[in-house]
Image 1 (cartoon, one colour):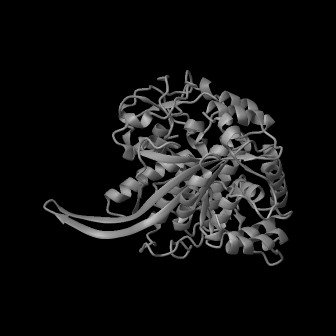
Image 2 (spheres, helix red, strand yellow; image 1 turned 90 degrees about the vertical axis):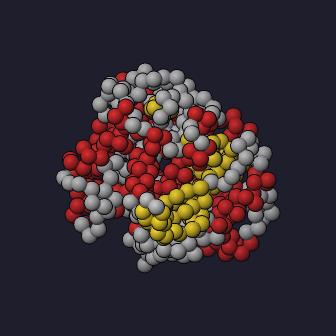
Image 3 (cartoon, one colour; image 1 turned 180 degrees about the horizontal axis):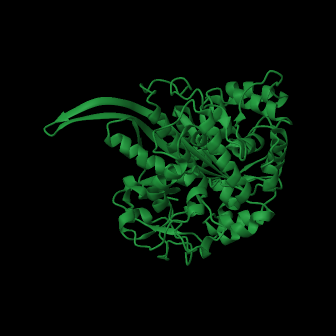
Length: 510
C-alpha cells in the first residue's frame, strides 16, 4: 500500500505492471522523513535487546493494533460455512496446522487531547485533536513444529518482498498450544502474554482468523467450542476487542471496507475534520536515528499528494477492484486499479448508487444496515470473498490459487514528485507491521469522529470512547451478524485458560 518502494513500470492500469520490489529508499523522494512510518523489525538477533522497548510500548499504549502474516488459510469454502460453530471448528483446524510467520504490533499511545482556540492577526482557529505516539513492530516468528503452507500464499508473499530466508534464519521460534516448560528464556509467547498482563484493548481488521492464530500459537490449545473461545477472549481482553471491518460494515457509510481503502479514506476524512476545527487524530513517531539498523522507513501519506486531475493514465476505474480490492482479470484488465484514484473518485459514484449523500454513521436504521450487508453478501457469494485485508488477498486455497498467481504483479501509482509508487504493501516483508499500523490508524480516527474522548488520562474503555455498541463484535464473512465475544449463559471458560491467565497476570517477568 503506502509503503511500497519505487517500481519501474509507468502503467497504472491492470496491464503491464511491474514485479520489481526495491529497497525502501522511497522515503528519500518525499519531502521530509515525517512522511515516513518507522517499522522496527524484531528478530532472534535483537529480541533480547529490544524487549524492554517492546514491553514499554505495550504497557504505555492506549490500544494495540495487531495483524498476523500466515502460511495459508486452507479451504476457503469451509471458512464461509454459514453455521458459526462449524466455521469455528474449521478455523481452529487451520490455526492448528498453519503458522504465523510475522506478527505486526502497532502501539498507539494517546499523549494529549487538545481543545484550544488559537487567535492571531488573521483570525481564530479551533484545534480539537487526539495526539498519539505510534510505535510499530514487525516481529518475525518461526514455528518450531511442522506446519502446512499454501503454494499460492508462499508465491504471493515472495512476489511481495517477503524474505523467507530471513524468517528461517532469524525468526523467533515458538511452539503451539499450551505451555510446555516452566522455565523458558524470553520468547514471543511471553511477549503476547505482556499484552494480556496489561489488559490492553486490541484492534484487528476482519480479525477472527487472527484471534484464533494468536490463541493457538502464542497462548494455549484452542477450545473445542466457539462459545468457550468467546468466553476466554472476554477474560483475556477485558478492555475490549475491536474489529475495524465490522465497524466499517455496520457503523460507517463507506462504499468499500477493505483495509487499503478504509485507511486512505480515513486519512482524507481526518484531514478534512482537522481543517474544519473538528476532532481529529494527529500522530507522531519516536525520534529514531535515520541510520538505525532494523528500522525501515515506509511512506504512508501518498494519498495527500495524489491529484486525480493531473492523473493522465487514461483509464477509468475498475468497479470490481474499486469496491472489493481485487479483480479476476488482474493484469489483463484495461481499467485502473490505482488505489489513490479509487479513494479520491469512488465515493460520489458509490453513494449515488446507494441512494444519497454521506451524512455520517447511521444509527438506529436496522433495515438500512441489513440491506447494505445483504448486498455485500450477494457479491461475496458470487466472487468468493470481497475482503482485501492483506491476509484475504495473500492467502488462498487450492481453488483460488490461480487467481493469486495472476495477482503476483502489482499496480503502481504516482506520488507528487512524478515517481511511481507501488500500491500494494509488503515492502521488505514488513507487511504485518504496516497492516497493524493501518488498522490502528483507522480505529484512532474513528474514535476521534465520536467526539467522546475528552481527556488523555481517560482509559480506553468502550464507554469513554463512545464505542459500547461496537466493542467485542468481530466481522463474519457472508453473515449479517458478527461473532460476539462474550460469556454466554451456558458457556464456561476453558480449563487451559483458567489455569494460565492467573500466572500471566501475576508472574509475567519479561
